[in-house]
Length: 197
Image 1 (cartoon, helix red, strand yellow):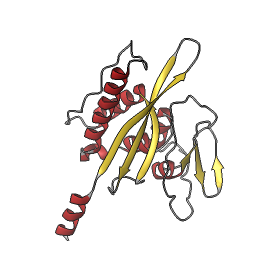
Image 2 (cartoon, one colour):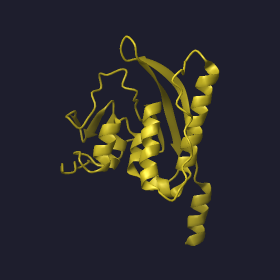
Image 3 (cartoon, one colour):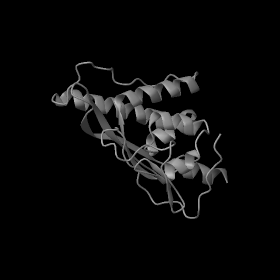
């Protein structure tokens, strides 16, 4: 039995890439850049085997802070430094930031202790906002972490054939939210909403 588990562990892979930077105009003066995080894996640690979401730099900063609080004995990898003069026109800056974000995520997903944090999984495999990730991880939503990951489509959680777009979900009409969609084969069978706390 142990040799079978060892064999499975040896054949597991997690491939993660940060790509496709996009500039979003927030208002007349402010803009932000978000990046696609593409994850492909056969690891049993992940609910979905393929997913793509969009996240901005400040959300990576939030994730690192969360992981740091949870894993006091682990030295976390660094994020690329915040640059107040970051410009999409400077391709070397864009490339260096994407590489730094990807290196950070690669180190995180290859650290077993960090994989126990549900916020990491929601960050990588759902299109929920940071606020909704926090609420879901604390059990303060009508859906579980697994449901949020599996059924998250355009900011709404699909429960059975109904779409629940209440205060627990993000609006799907916002084009500059910095978040994207996750795609994968849905879980078979009906989902039961968890009670709201």
